[in-house]
Every structure is written in structure tokens, then in C-alpha cells.
Image (cartoon, rainbow, N blue to C red; front, side):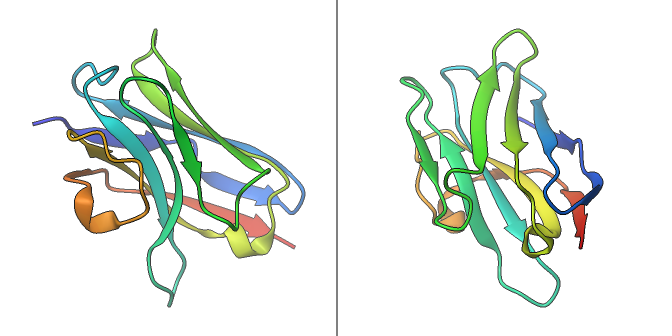
Length: 124
């Protein structure tokens, strides 16, 4: 089974940027659609972004459109999330997820592989 490990979280001031990376234990290019979700303390899990398995189709949650970018790094076998113009409302644990069926939607229940999460904290 593919294992996912997130990295890149940390503390940043409002208006700043962070880049998260999700590393997979096996080659994910063309094998899995990949996504990022987040969960803020006391809130439900929220869809952030997803990228397709074959054609690189992307999908973003409304709250991050225009600020976040999901991409694949084929050389590193990672899926990255570039986060710009961060606000305190982006503070959450960010999780990487994978779906072998190629799903790029927002339904967390479809994704069958999950990482352990990385904390992102945005100070005001």
C-alpha cells in the first residue's frame, strides 16, 4: 500500500507563504489522484485541492482559489501545495490523500490513502 508523508508545515505570519510536500512510498505519477485536505481545531475536515492522475486536472476549494496551487514534482515523486497570502483562517492540520481511481473531487470518503498530517499555523 502506498504510504504518504507530509512535510513543510510550520509557523508563518499572515500574508506569508508556505510550501507543503506529500511524499509517497511508491511512484504516484499516473497511478493516483492526489489531494490536500485540512482540519482546523474544532471544525470539520475541509477540501483544499486535488490534482488528477493522468492529465493533471486540478480542483480547488473555494476558500483557497487564487491563493493555493497544487502540483506534482515528478522527479521527487511528491505532490506539493504552494500556499500564498496566508491568513489566520488557514491555520489547520493539512493532510495529503490519494485515490487510485483518479477522483479529484472534494469527498474525503473517496480517498483511500491518507498521511498523518502537518501543522500549519498562521499568526496575525
